[in-house]
Image 1 (cartoon, rainbow, N blue to C red):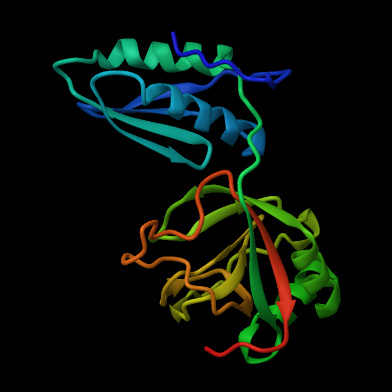
Image 2: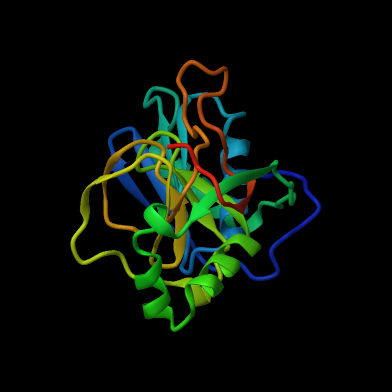
Length: 230
């Protein structure tokens, strides 16, 4: 059984589901809604699996954990049962990640959708910027493209649906809101999130020792600045 000693245990744990992805991969799907507590439990399960022989890859996702394994060493059905048991029993240590500050130019040419976000939420543009920059976020997982962090912790007042018509090219460094989440585009790509600002920080660089600026569990603060160079 997966087990890890820690200092914090969730007071209420709902049942998780498991299913096959392919012949050598299974996924544990945590119950809704997405939360930091669920993500911490997923990270703990993933860390415990690193000690298991026959596990070839562990991929934490948003409210899920996908595990790839060597069929010659691991029985998939038994692994799914182990994951379900571990979800209920594992103790989670609340580990504070690094605090990463991201300077952001809001409004103007850098925030083309700030007015739409304000109109949807009933806030002024200034209130949107204040709420967005005052919050502390947690990196839930990295996905969509290298270095793109899905961040939890955005104030509910800022929840805004994606654009009806996605852009063909969202500039690298765009800070945006999509539904109940916020994030930063590491490179220019298509996207439908609402852009409210821009940062010059390079989020992913394959030449660095650690290519991604952030990792799951890191904490993020957006800092409003007046000058961007991109």
